[in-house]
Length: 102
Figure 1 (cartoon, rainbow, N blue to C red):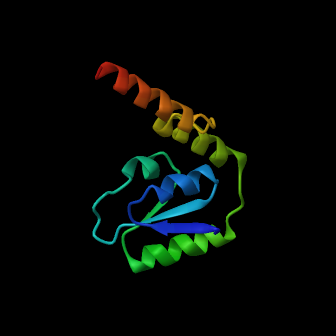
Figure 2: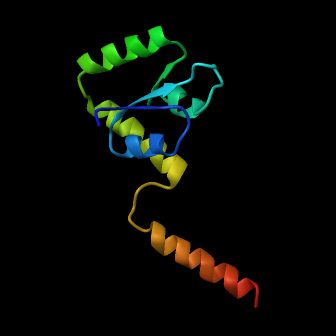
């Protein structure tokens, strides 16, 4: 996948983690995932014309390290960053909750 087109999904975050370009399709102008857009990590299309413009733009865009750095920073803030410890944290939380119920 070179570009992910989505409305509202955790798949957007996965695409960002994989350094893919993202276009948020928002034809009803509902403002989903505004934080991703306002951080400069995705483009928002509110019409067919905008969608076409964004796809055309991304097809000719050169990749830069700046965008990767912005994506990493955003993901760290939003998801506690990819650190390969998510399963461990979940188990710790479950065990902590179970101890509290005893």
